[in-house]
Amino acid sequence: MALWSERRQTFAEAATAGPDGTFGLSANALYVPRKSSRNGATIFSIAVFAVTCTVVLLLAWLACGEVTAGAIVVMLLAATLVVSSVHIALAWERVVVLRLGKLNRVVGPGLYLTIPIIEHGTIRVDQRIIATPFGAEKTLSADLVPINIDAVLYWVVRDAQEACTEVEDYYSAVSFLAQTAMREAVGRSTVAEVALRRDQLDAEIKSDVEKETASWGIDIISVKVRDIVIPDELQEVMSLEAQADREKNARMSVASVEADLAEMLADAARVYGDPEAALKLRTMLLQYETVKKSSGAVVTVPTAVSDGFVEPAAASGKQGVERHG
Image 1 (spheres, rainbow, N blue to C red):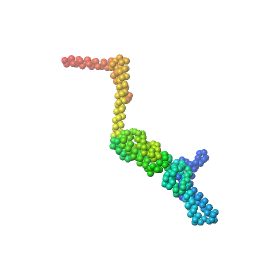
Image 2: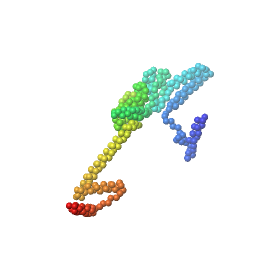
Image 3: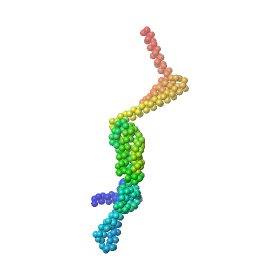
Image 4: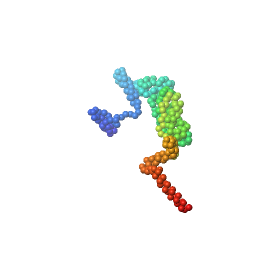
């Protein structure tokens, strides 16, 4: 009673009037099943059983004027035979029917009939896309590094007859086969290739699984690697290696830029007619970059002024040498 009261209260809260005066269920209160069910087919079988029982009892009453024990036995037998003869296959199902142990036909979807005792549906095959998660723990790569990988396999049963007759449990067989194919694909690649080329790993696993499942009536749609776990110590080494590669590329880019800049400055020096102009222009660019980074100031002194400071100093030094001489 308490559970029913809570559900009734939840429904009442959800079915409140909206701003337009209408009533509706909120998104949180509306129950939407995550997976389809066979409740409809089960209810149909129960209804067939009940209708058969009612008809047999009605006929017994009309014939004998009363319901006897024999009529009840006949009712149960008739209802059992009818229920075992009339079936429903859902829209995505195919049923493999055997007659005296031999393959007879594949039926579905919809209503189908079987002969009691002689025929029976051996398996119901779901022909929707199936997502099967699988993984491989501590799988050794080509360079002997243990790796943990998780992936998802998307597949569908193309032929229900082959899936029933060619393999005992096709669902488990596909899962084990995908795991084995992953281990083989990882064993053919290095850690760097596994980490950086997921698309190639997906394609290799898909190709290996397709070779085996082609005769099972199963089509492989795709394989998606979800996660790759590398040992912590190796992650640090790979990070240092990647950092070194980036630094190397940066230095190569700087050297290439310097070469291009040197050519442009040499062309400018030829325009000025001074071979040393290229070096002076480069010096000025370096000063500009220094000031730009440090937010300082650079005072440019004309050459004539600087020579004026240098020549008196050189003359006084020459006179001092002569006196000592």
